[in-house]
Image (cartoon, rainbow, N blue to C red):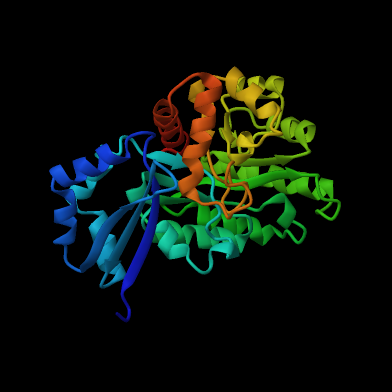
Length: 338
């Protein structure tokens, strides 16, 4: 049918709970209620034969507006409770051009997949503006706004004014992604990166917002600069520092976030840090479309893979994945004030 919206949703159930979850959907009448909604043309679950925890949902709606209304239906709250608590993806770049072909169909069904919170950081003024637009459109998406160190080469004072204006939007919850990146020789000069970082940290302090820090091969300088802003709240995304650095950040009141890199065979520091720091200072993320967790490394990443990061943390801390998801969900909401 022309102009209809068809979604193919991949959902990883809690380990061993796939059949129980589907039985509950039936016995509680949730599937029947969804199929009776205005505009619902199809709503069918299929079981993967390759993965015992994977479910494929095929849903079709007459219009996108009816699909959005479906997400707000009372029985959808019941469905979410059956999935246990949501998981949060605190760092994903859905403004990236790798999502140009299917951005809407990836973002729209995330709550049905148990991903109830996505923070999309900008890396330029333009991508920050896109992050705000996505946050306006999707109830479960929030924006961070900022200028990434790789993109600060042509920084102008008016860029900071633009970020300030975007940061005042209702669903802008942080200044980021900002920081230092010394990895690539062609990156902007280090003094310029440092200047732009200080400017954005000062802006975050002015607006009483937390910051999302990018720190690649620049630990000493990044730490020296954040120490200049006592009392500022922040998270080091894709944390790659030492246990000692992590402990100092925790003592400063900061958070650490981990993504698929922590699942890689060559990960060395991340497992040590994950074991060493308090659970109430950890968050999980995808950094989508990058750093897809093992065993799917090499594929384009998206928020549905964030549970694999939770599973790795659970292994390292001798916890259940559900307990890690619950803790990091609460940490993310507390940190971003959501």
